[in-house]
Amino acid sequence: MEHNILQITPKQWGSPASKLTELLLTGHPQTNGQRRVNMDTDSLRRIFMWIDLNVPYYGTSETAYPEMPGCRRLYPPELDKTLAEVAARRCAACHQGGRVPRPFWTRLQNPQRNGFLLAPLAIEDGGTGKCGQAVFKGTADPDYQAILRTFDPILDLLQKRPRMDMPGARPADVDRSCLGSLQ
Image (cartoon, rainbow, N blue to C red):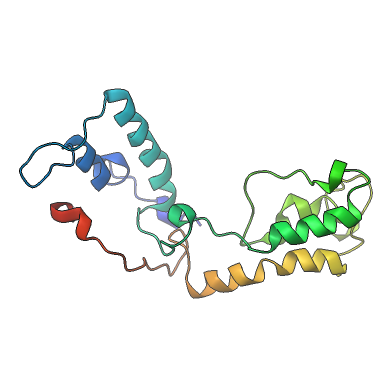
C-alpha cells in the first residue's frame, strides 16, 4: 500500500502544492480582489501541518467517497451493534458491562487482524490470548463469524470502488465550480 508515497520531489505534494494553501495565502479573494480570509501565522501553520501529515499518506486530496465523514471514513455499519451483542453475551464476565476495549482505528482490509477478534480467539487458532482464556475456540465460532461478516459490505464496496490509497482508485465526480481560478 505504499505505492502512493514514492513521490519525493520537493514541493510536489503537501502544503507547497495544495490549492488550499494558495487559497489561504491569497485570502480567498472575492471577485473584486478583497480578501475574505485573514489568518494569523500560527493558524496557517496548523493547517499546513495538517495538509503535510495527511496528503503524503493519500497522495491526493481527491476522494472516491465524498459522501462519507471526512470523505474517507469507511466503517462497517453493523459492527458496533454486533460487537456489543456478542460482548454482552460472552465478554461481560471479564469486561465491565460487556464493553470491549478497542483502539480508535479498525482494520478494514484484514478484519481478522483486529484486536477484538484476535484477543478472544484461541491461541492455537491464531489468537493473541489477551483475554486469558479463549472465548472463541476457533474461527468457525458463530459469533466470530457474525463479527467478521459485518465487514462484508465494506469489503465489497472497496472491491468496486477502491479508496484513493488503493490501486485502481478513481476520484468521485464532484462540483469544483467553487474553486474558480484555482482549478
